[in-house]
Length: 185
Figure: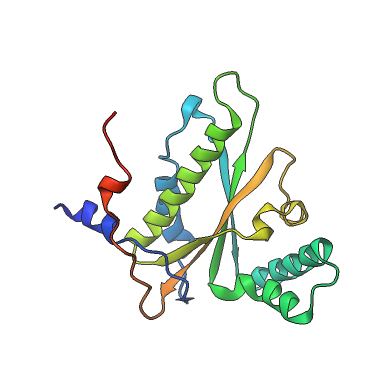
């Protein structure tokens, strides 16, 4: 088995992340890899926002505010959890799908392309020696959060990539039986 395929077979998300995160210089080729995603009509229906340092605290406040809009009765523990979520990694990358009207490329295909670009970024980060996890949760689908991040009406969050350096061991993934998911037609 070749080295690249073995890398893909070993890939697993890592929730425990510490400093350092990829630098801006290190991120450039990772984003370049993300741009190689399948993309019908070359719409490039994605964009990314990097959130690091104290901006993570600010994002956490936006998460808390959005929680209180969704659930005004949220207790202090839930509010603190929302506010602290962006602090789980030294770098968050907000993956955004930018959906446009197109006669041949429906919105679902544009969302899938943005998802592929996001996964390409995650793979590139891991191939560069970093670790990460793709998270969503209610905040990813919350228009209050999207507005706070400056998303346009035609944009939506695909997910939050939490990136940093692996801290401890990550949970091993079970090996799935391919024949349970693949068949000939």
